[in-house]
Image 1 (cartoon, helix red, strand yellow):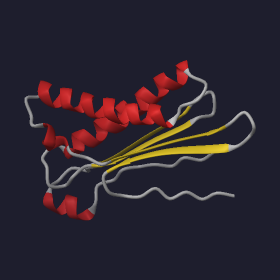
Image 2 (image 1 turned 120 degrees about the vertical axis):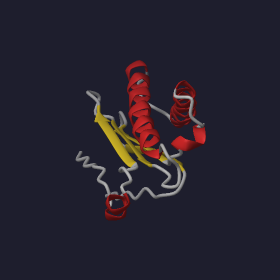
Image 3 (image 1 turned 60 degrees about the vertical axis):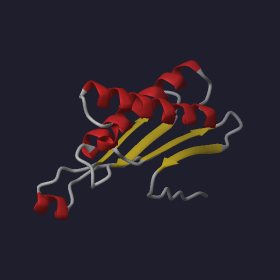
Image 4 (image 1 turned 180 degrees about the vertical axis):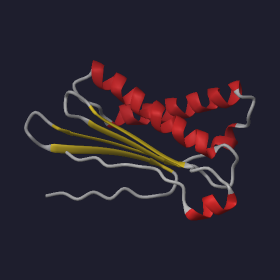
Length: 137
């Protein structure tokens, strides 16, 4: 399995002095489960770069914790991770005395693994715009 990810500041952001508002994080566990999180901060709000970095880190951390206690992650787990990540982002905004909306970001989560009967499974959660493209043999 090959996972490649990076977030770089775009030309328009460089020209206007805006930070990179994209973030990605991934982990391949000792069980061979691949976990990927990608976020694209909303350009029209002031702290979307912070929101994007926070949600990808938090989501991967939560997925790792789930995988340590279960044989495999299921769609209900993914939905819970999305909800809990959103709640933790709200808490962070409160602690910073900022409006939650200032941290607006998309979030895409992907979990891939091989089942006991050697089938490949992929779970995807997607909040906001963007796309997930997969290729299969």
